[in-house]
Length: 173
Image 1 (cartoon, rainbow, N blue to C red):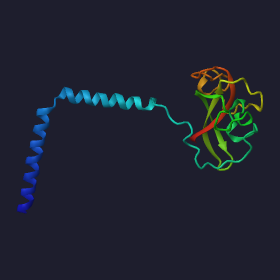
Image 2 (image 1 turned 30 degrees about the vertical axis):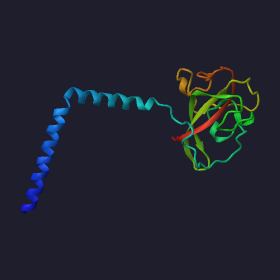
Image 3 (image 1 turned 45 degrees about the horizontal axis):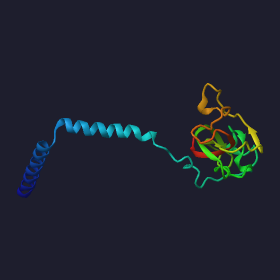
């Protein structure tokens, strides 16, 4: 048991020396300042941009993306980009996706699960005028604008001209 006392004594001495050295080189104000900086930085983290297409890797789907009955379009109001030179998830060339979106929750018939869908308007070109859909399943009235498909969402883009809409799967609801 003598060697345990020696190890504990050595550990106690080193810890004591380290704590005293840290106390000589720092202050409570400095510690509080650094702690508050970390807390403010952590609170800003949710405001950073997030990739909108992170939930659909490996998702099994069925149906025609150029049909209004496609499962992702349950709350879509507009022209389908899949009929206008783009796809379900990408704007056609010359159009730019609006960073402001509305969302819906749609049931995938393959796995019978609900998924959160982000509807992005593609802007910057004249309206496509092909494959118009107006589905309002689970749509909210205009007083809840983040879930309404009746608003032009071409804000934050160079041009406010609406062209078509894409439907991105964000993840399981």
